[in-house]
Image (cartoon, rainbow, N blue to C red; front, side, top):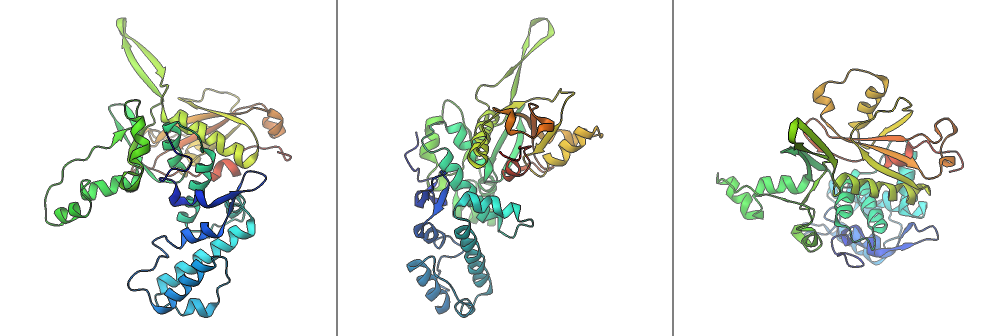
Length: 360
């Protein structure tokens, strides 16, 4: 069961944020100090005098104004660029007044100039706030999809997703860290590493394994339906009570309510059989054009259709909060992977593309 602030989540700075009257997250000086500890900005042995001086000044006064001369004193062009990006991001978040206002504003402004890593760290902190006090490990694991790229595979009829970076690391090292990399470089064969699928038998271990090297190391089962063969050639299809899709739907509903102030119910669906289908949106870059083609009746190849992980039905608790032309009708959501099995959610799509009434 999670502590008030799990060590797993402190890397996003959730424990260094304050709340405003709306319940949104307000950055503090300590929050920005944490950014200065990240690998992109932290000092290393090769750091020049200019970098050391600027870093020390920002640690002492994280909101101080930095001059062009101070940035110009940094010899390494990449480091100098990192500081410029950080300072621009810091100033934008401070001007917005909260992480949520800044996040929403970045997408409303048009072309996104913020590095994806920065956006993911904002989402991680916001999601941590949404799940604070929640002891459901499936929802916490599903929440990782909002800010961590995943790899999806189908194994014996189960749709499993695992953290992209962790799976790549295990593939490169066999779970043996630096020693594993040395063995690979020497031509040695590494043992196959199996990541555990989050289940009732290991759910308690999810909390303790999330610290240090154990972070992000559980697979999430995204299978919505299971089939059981019955006598006389019959097949029984049942919805899984512990599907990761159900947990993801619950997290997405919290996300919508937190940002938009509207209560919605989201549930996974195996198919859309609705002649009155009026509104849909993709939860990722792959699902959006796929749903568009299905909606318009365009032919979709079987290979492309197999990338569709799930559909969801979203309903507003109060239909009056919807646009008049679609009021009371469901909104269909899609979740899809790329041709090589990658999945990257775009939670901003739920903020930008829901059919909200003007006053909502």
